[in-house]
Length: 295
Length: 295
Image (spheres, rainbow over the protein chains, first blue to last red):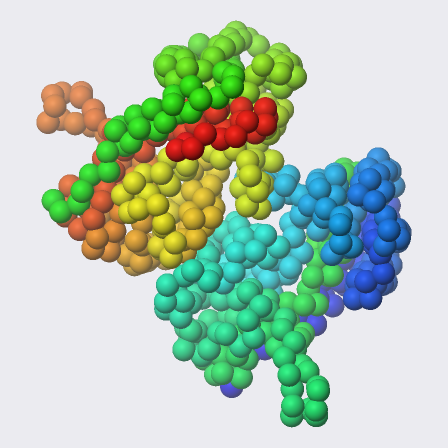
């Protein structure tokens, strides 16, 4: 093991602390509306965490619940109300929606200036065009982790993103590009993926294939920002037990990489921290406040 | 010279012919509104060409002129009118606008469904998110040229785009990604640019630096789609004479490449052809017509 561990849990705590400090310096209290439709147990846990962390950072969090039986119209009407509500700075629609509802159409109803998940067409377009806007949380977290490992100036680093999802792969590529990195987007159709990955100073696997990235895919000294979170069997922990692993084979890659994020405790904790940060940024942009330093 | 020449002029003529054929099969006539503000001589030529080629393809072209002294409000009001005009399928705002006008703000007034230049935030977002929408014309032309050289299935090809402009570099990268290519975006901050370029099966220089790409930047057999159009001195043609060259050193690169676009006569002619194509696509999407085959 030669790689130094990028401690996402600690860095996420730093981001949350900087958000809380920023909030305390603002002339008003940012407010996040969280919309949960239905009874999905995992979604309930996520929403609870988001609400709690928003409040811990000194912001207002309003939790809106709609029943499993809510219609598309019900969901969109609620979003339209929240768009019009001047006290609301950010709107988060917890996904997935119950079957039969059109998540894309609902997301498009969110006012881009309140789109703290960065999921609307306008938010994606602003990112692509290099205009100010709200950017998806997980890719933002990846860039923050890379900067903590390698320094604030990532200019000229070659980033290889594996995966081209709209939630992570593509926005991560665009964000690293905005940091003046050379960026390669690889995916399932890429030929000789190991060779492509070996060009990377920063390797960002985001495909959901446990342990896919091996040591011989990694340039010595490279940073691995592992977005994969995969549940696999863990017979060593007892019958029927499981554990979480990333897309990189951690033990193997850590022998070669210079920096690596663990799973869990790497990219995962950054997502909510970046949501809180986006809520502050949305509030500042909407209300004409200066963004506090250090955010 | 080993490379075969990708004849953009002939391929653009094919695209225009397929547009004209498509138009003749539609239940109605698509219509393009072209807005020219001021008296810029080059813009007047461009607009005249666009209007003429639109009409030659069997479509309606309406040319709107505003004086050099037009206000931002004048420009935006005209666009708003054209958005509301059901007979208009595509709106093209000729750039640059006269000094003092905000082109970005004016472009954002264009209804995304009529944005045949693919310049609005929503159009860029749809491209990034992989949703149906209108895509900028020059990058669309690059993909068509690459397919004509290498075949319709570009899956797995490694594309290196040099340049990250919002008009060409970034949309070209996203379009080739949608064709299942591995895509690298390189630029002025890229380290060892020649080595990065040598990985390319398809090399797309789009930076505006005459003759920058040399033979030793090119993998033997690669296709070069040269977006650069640079005017340089041509003393061999006589004192004070100039000629157009691309970003690739054509004579040098043609020794190594498998396929290469000339400048002029490569990417350039594709742009208006793709504008005509976008006008048909916009009309079909707006009016619920099937897109004719072969477009």
